[in-house]
Image 1 (cartoon, rainbow, N blue to C red):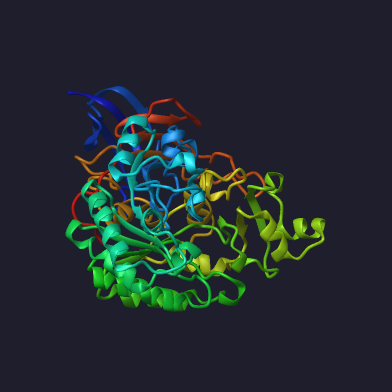
Image 2 (tube, rainbow, N blue to C red; image 1 turned 45 degrees about the vertical axis):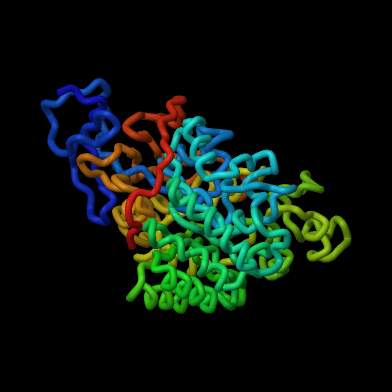
Length: 482
């Protein structure tokens, strides 16, 4: 038999959190057909891995690439770091289903201007992704704030009975069309007024579809434990898995509380499927929030609509130049985005190392001066935290961005190197892989990624995308797992 691709002499780390083994991997018709000693086999294309690591393609479980996968389908920031699947629609904001009556409400503006929101039904978005043929696979959540903006004239209150009923219907239709679940961003002003009861009623739609509930907590600061308790209450009511987005201890006053936070996560996991994602940096990035303006740690402006030239500058320098307070400078800059250096490295490491945590970049591709996680999150875990720091073995690092992620989100036949699974693969050098993007030059491709295959097709090699775009829209299939 002639295979399409044969990767020889690979150190296979298969995504199941077990040590690697040496094997050849044969691909045909987009799938992994054989694994083992295939010395006599032949293929149209053969690659000698020469002992480099062959892993499942990385799954970025927390992205805001909703419109980018359509407008810039090459998706180089993700493809270049070995990501083969992105999950969009996080933090309560999604490109669909959306019917805007003006500018997108904060933080939906993280996904683009009003012109980017042209998908009134989830099926419209799915069709647009399929037509765009992005280089990587795309799976999508439905955002709670997006639903609210469709039916509410005032987002600074909880929804009425009629509004909740309309949102439930739209969520149900989206789940029928393949959405993975519902996301919330309760910390943001335009969702903060939503009551727990409002969210619980919406999540009642999830269980029938085996869907998941993900949440940017109502607070990641001092009330973080109370916010986690709310998330777990909602998940138990819905009888659906809970994933806490970018779990962290934000703000100087919250530093050192990761043991408490992780204990709460473990306690909830004893009787309900829960987990979290996190990114490997001690700085966050989002819209510029006046509630987070402080002189306790640096804040860098990433974009500003009225003052675009201020992108990349520190808020304290802008305030000094203008002769105003930090808060007044922030008001003048809005709407804007920012990087907040508000976490402690020890907390980041504890959360990153925990068995219940997955890797998600939370990158913001619309930012003119983005957080480096957009280009470097996954190589940073593999190079800095696994190899250099020794926080966990390489096979555990891979598991946190492949097998665990696919199981949590119900991505069938993805996330593991198994015969019969889709051939989403990444070949990398474990000795040289590293993130190159930093806070000074954040848009730089990682080093050490030697090959990326999506659905069996080589799409990135020798530091370059080759123009092949074989990504697919991944609809929810079956039950999500823990």
